[in-house]
Length: 183
Image 1 (tube, rainbow, N blue to C red):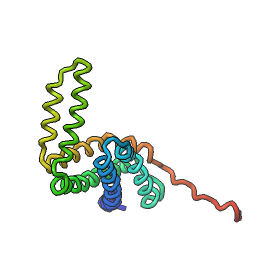
Image 2: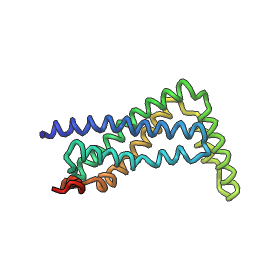
Image 3: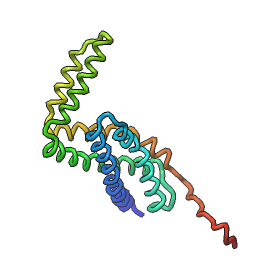
Image 4: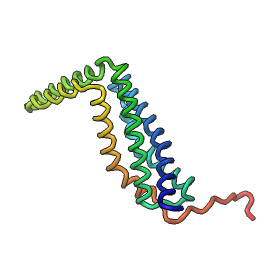
């Protein structure tokens, strides 16, 4: 297989896997919007490295006959996160543009009030925090989508190498034997 064919294959799998990860992020986002105090949204978001790792292992086992290098694993994980970030940004933009009507900004403002009280109780200055919350609450839908997309890309880039290290394999795994019919 040439380098061009290998990259095309990697990107094709990463697009499908990116759609799966974007669905996970969408479920996390919806869970957070529906119940901000619940841990379900955060738990789904924290499952991202495990999902990307599982998809990289699936790519390794089904497309590469059980062998993947760290470099190819990192590339697959990064492309998966990149495609997921783009798709999720589109989903978030649509939500913020057509469905939100200021409820996310209100949620940020409410959380900011709680943080401000905690800062004041500790004797800390709250001016910077208040300015940051006001700035976040005033973002446009495209700015929210791009903010989350850049955050997802940065965190995903940091996680690609550890995922690739866990998923790498230089020797294919032996096929399982059927112990009932041992020839």
